[in-house]
Image (cartoon, rainbow, N blue to C red; front, side, top):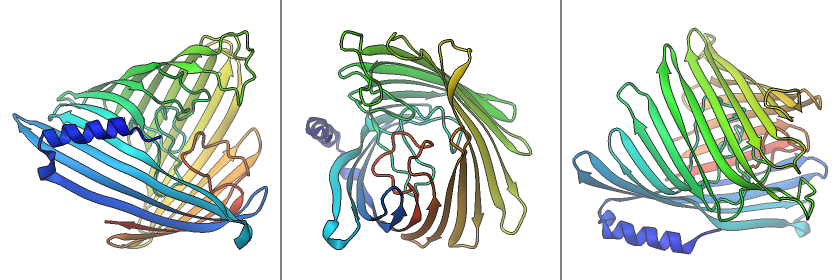
Length: 379
């Protein structure tokens, strides 16, 4: 939901600083259509336009002030026959932030994208976004908050954040944050031989989701969630990384108190033709009564490859396997890139209910089996 007061105050503040003298505008328009055979066969199509205004003002002494204001204008339609068309569209804020920065620190406030970690396909540290690796546009909602980052001369860095006004589940969250409460946390990254390691923490007050959990009206419907994440990446002959997240939720109504997410992955570029980049990951999600006790959950494995056919063409594939349900996910994508235009042809063969991609932004057009064509224009 667009917050007009925030947008108006942002514009007034920027104009008072003289930002109008250094304004840049760009945008991304996309159109798509295809066919998906899932529980009910459907044809689908859609349009999206993301206009983005970027403002910049040097303040002297190595300081600068900049800001981004962008909107997400979209429409998704689906139909069986031409007289059965149904769809939905809206205009949402996409990014509205302002930043004060120098060579070693930045403070950014507003609606922004916050992500970190080393994993590519399954991301236990996907705390504040919901990016589907198969989405060519990498669309994801932002979060309202303040982010502070400081960069040391040895490439170590520390992050601190505070979030407010984000009432939808984010990333792997199953329960939304309680309305009118603050979320906060931080992160540190430190370089190590051939790589880097990170430690992250986040706390929030969650509201139990009645859609997935029958809440006793006499019970406590909120809980405090504390989560800690550890990650690392090393680039040797092959790339290797891992992400591990442990969450604790103190509510007796929940069937579990602890949740564990873990991921390990490797990648390597094979010297065949123009070079085939191959990546593999394994992901485990568990819920348990004790932090390190036996838990219930699911596990997923993935393999992806990327091959540049020439200067303008690229071919990629992503394959997932759900070990508990014995389900396969298959996704193939051919991309052709020109100066401003990009064309995608995507083929997919997936389960009707996707377990691998929680809390997606917008409509999932990759359920079942089918194809999708997409045309993107950047200006």
